[in-house]
Image 1 (cartoon, rainbow, N blue to C red):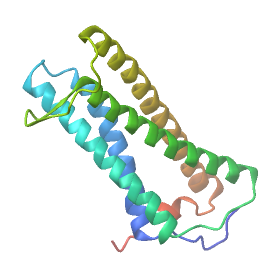
Image 2 (image 1 turned 180 degrees about the vertical axis):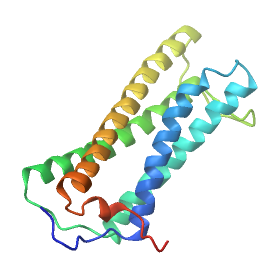
Image 3 (image 1 turned 30 degrees about the horizontal axis):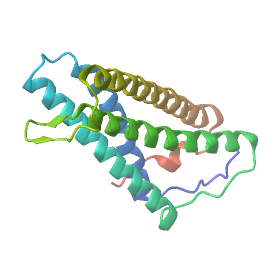
Length: 182
Protein backbone atom coordinates (compact mmCIF):
# COMPACT_ATOMS: atom_id res chain seq x y z
CA UNK A 1 0.00 0.00 0.00
CA UNK A 2 2.72 2.51 0.93
CA UNK A 3 6.33 2.82 -0.13
CA UNK A 4 9.10 0.98 1.73
CA UNK A 5 10.33 4.26 3.24
CA UNK A 6 7.15 6.08 4.28
CA UNK A 7 7.14 9.84 4.41
CA UNK A 8 6.79 11.20 7.96
CA UNK A 9 4.88 14.14 9.27
CA UNK A 10 6.92 17.00 10.71
CA UNK A 11 7.49 17.28 14.46
CA UNK A 12 4.95 20.07 14.99
CA UNK A 13 2.21 18.15 13.17
CA UNK A 14 2.98 15.06 15.25
CA UNK A 15 3.02 17.04 18.51
CA UNK A 16 -0.27 18.79 17.71
CA UNK A 17 -1.88 15.45 16.78
CA UNK A 18 -0.92 13.77 20.06
CA UNK A 19 -1.75 16.86 22.12
CA UNK A 20 -5.20 16.92 20.53
CA UNK A 21 -5.68 13.23 21.35
CA UNK A 22 -4.57 13.72 24.96
CA UNK A 23 -6.84 16.74 25.46
CA UNK A 24 -9.85 14.90 24.00
CA UNK A 25 -9.34 11.99 26.40
CA UNK A 26 -8.73 14.35 29.35
CA UNK A 27 -11.89 16.34 28.53
CA UNK A 28 -14.02 13.22 28.12
CA UNK A 29 -12.87 11.73 31.44
CA UNK A 30 -13.13 15.11 33.16
CA UNK A 31 -16.68 15.65 31.91
CA UNK A 32 -17.73 12.37 33.49
CA UNK A 33 -16.09 13.37 36.78
CA UNK A 34 -17.67 16.84 37.14
CA UNK A 35 -20.92 15.62 38.68
CA UNK A 36 -19.07 13.46 41.22
CA UNK A 37 -18.01 16.67 42.97
CA UNK A 38 -20.45 18.14 45.50
CA UNK A 39 -22.33 21.23 44.40
CA UNK A 40 -20.33 24.29 45.24
CA UNK A 41 -16.74 25.45 44.75
CA UNK A 42 -15.26 22.02 43.88
CA UNK A 43 -17.79 21.43 41.12
CA UNK A 44 -17.31 24.99 39.86
CA UNK A 45 -13.55 24.37 39.74
CA UNK A 46 -14.00 21.02 37.94
CA UNK A 47 -16.30 22.62 35.38
CA UNK A 48 -13.88 25.55 35.05
CA UNK A 49 -11.00 23.19 34.27
CA UNK A 50 -13.23 21.52 31.64
CA UNK A 51 -14.15 24.85 30.03
CA UNK A 52 -10.58 26.20 30.02
CA UNK A 53 -9.25 22.90 28.63
CA UNK A 54 -11.95 23.01 25.93
CA UNK A 55 -10.79 26.50 24.95
CA UNK A 56 -7.23 25.13 24.91
CA UNK A 57 -8.33 22.32 22.60
CA UNK A 58 -9.99 24.86 20.30
CA UNK A 59 -6.72 26.83 20.22
CA UNK A 60 -4.69 23.69 19.43
CA UNK A 61 -7.20 22.70 16.75
CA UNK A 62 -6.99 26.15 15.13
CA UNK A 63 -3.18 25.92 15.25
CA UNK A 64 -3.31 22.45 13.66
CA UNK A 65 -5.50 23.65 10.83
CA UNK A 66 -3.38 26.77 10.22
CA UNK A 67 -0.15 24.76 10.38
CA UNK A 68 -1.52 22.12 8.01
CA UNK A 69 -2.48 24.78 5.49
CA UNK A 70 0.69 26.87 5.84
CA UNK A 71 3.70 24.76 6.61
CA UNK A 72 2.94 21.27 7.85
CA UNK A 73 3.98 18.17 5.98
CA UNK A 74 1.33 16.97 3.56
CA UNK A 75 1.47 13.27 2.74
CA UNK A 76 0.76 12.64 -0.95
CA UNK A 77 -2.81 11.50 -1.54
CA UNK A 78 -3.55 7.91 -2.29
CA UNK A 79 -6.37 7.15 -4.69
CA UNK A 80 -7.53 3.97 -3.00
CA UNK A 81 -11.05 3.70 -1.63
CA UNK A 82 -9.65 3.07 1.85
CA UNK A 83 -7.62 6.28 1.73
CA UNK A 84 -10.67 8.23 0.61
CA UNK A 85 -12.64 6.82 3.56
CA UNK A 86 -9.77 7.72 5.93
CA UNK A 87 -9.75 11.30 4.65
CA UNK A 88 -13.53 11.58 5.10
CA UNK A 89 -13.19 10.31 8.68
CA UNK A 90 -10.45 12.86 9.37
CA UNK A 91 -12.71 15.65 8.11
CA UNK A 92 -15.57 14.28 10.20
CA UNK A 93 -13.30 14.25 13.27
CA UNK A 94 -12.33 17.88 12.68
CA UNK A 95 -15.98 18.83 12.17
CA UNK A 96 -17.10 16.99 15.29
CA UNK A 97 -14.32 18.56 17.34
CA UNK A 98 -15.32 22.06 16.23
CA UNK A 99 -19.05 21.41 16.74
CA UNK A 100 -18.57 19.79 20.15
CA UNK A 101 -16.34 22.59 21.40
CA UNK A 102 -18.81 25.19 20.07
CA UNK A 103 -21.67 23.44 21.87
CA UNK A 104 -19.66 23.37 25.10
CA UNK A 105 -18.89 27.08 24.88
CA UNK A 106 -22.51 27.86 24.03
CA UNK A 107 -23.61 25.88 27.07
CA UNK A 108 -21.22 27.80 29.32
CA UNK A 109 -22.88 31.01 28.10
CA UNK A 110 -26.39 29.65 28.46
CA UNK A 111 -25.67 28.59 32.05
CA UNK A 112 -23.69 31.73 32.85
CA UNK A 113 -20.90 29.61 34.33
CA UNK A 114 -18.35 30.90 36.79
CA UNK A 115 -14.66 30.27 36.14
CA UNK A 116 -13.04 29.28 39.43
CA UNK A 117 -15.34 31.71 41.23
CA UNK A 118 -13.23 34.56 39.83
CA UNK A 119 -15.04 35.44 36.62
CA UNK A 120 -18.65 34.93 35.60
CA UNK A 121 -19.48 34.26 31.97
CA UNK A 122 -22.49 36.46 31.16
CA UNK A 123 -25.64 34.38 30.81
CA UNK A 124 -26.98 34.34 27.26
CA UNK A 125 -30.46 35.75 26.76
CA UNK A 126 -33.20 36.53 29.23
CA UNK A 127 -34.63 33.07 29.82
CA UNK A 128 -36.59 32.17 32.91
CA UNK A 129 -34.70 29.61 35.05
CA UNK A 130 -36.73 26.61 33.85
CA UNK A 131 -36.27 27.49 30.17
CA UNK A 132 -32.55 28.18 30.71
CA UNK A 133 -32.16 24.79 32.41
CA UNK A 134 -34.09 23.00 29.65
CA UNK A 135 -31.96 24.65 26.95
CA UNK A 136 -28.77 23.80 28.83
CA UNK A 137 -29.87 20.16 29.17
CA UNK A 138 -30.56 19.96 25.42
CA UNK A 139 -27.18 21.47 24.55
CA UNK A 140 -25.47 19.17 27.07
CA UNK A 141 -27.05 16.17 25.32
CA UNK A 142 -25.74 17.30 21.93
CA UNK A 143 -22.33 18.07 23.45
CA UNK A 144 -22.17 14.59 24.99
CA UNK A 145 -23.28 12.97 21.74
CA UNK A 146 -20.54 14.82 19.86
CA UNK A 147 -17.91 13.89 22.45
CA UNK A 148 -18.91 10.22 22.35
CA UNK A 149 -18.89 10.23 18.55
CA UNK A 150 -15.38 11.72 18.61
CA UNK A 151 -14.20 8.94 20.92
CA UNK A 152 -15.76 6.24 18.73
CA UNK A 153 -14.25 7.66 15.53
CA UNK A 154 -10.88 8.30 17.16
CA UNK A 155 -10.93 4.76 18.53
CA UNK A 156 -11.59 3.44 15.02
CA UNK A 157 -8.79 5.67 13.76
CA UNK A 158 -6.42 4.17 16.34
CA UNK A 159 -7.50 0.61 15.51
CA UNK A 160 -6.85 1.22 11.81
CA UNK A 161 -3.42 2.66 12.62
CA UNK A 162 -2.65 -0.57 14.47
CA UNK A 163 -3.98 -2.65 11.55
CA UNK A 164 -1.67 -0.73 9.23
CA UNK A 165 1.26 -1.33 11.57
CA UNK A 166 0.77 -4.92 12.68
CA UNK A 167 -1.36 -6.31 9.86
CA UNK A 168 -0.24 -4.59 6.70
CA UNK A 169 3.27 -3.54 7.79
CA UNK A 170 3.05 -0.49 5.52
CA UNK A 171 4.60 2.19 7.72
CA UNK A 172 1.49 4.38 7.97
CA UNK A 173 1.62 4.47 11.78
CA UNK A 174 5.30 5.48 11.68
CA UNK A 175 4.31 8.71 9.95
CA UNK A 176 2.66 10.01 13.13
CA UNK A 177 4.96 8.55 15.81
CA UNK A 178 7.53 10.88 17.37
CA UNK A 179 11.18 10.39 16.38
CA UNK A 180 13.06 8.23 18.82
CA UNK A 181 15.63 11.02 18.99
CA UNK A 182 13.17 13.43 20.66
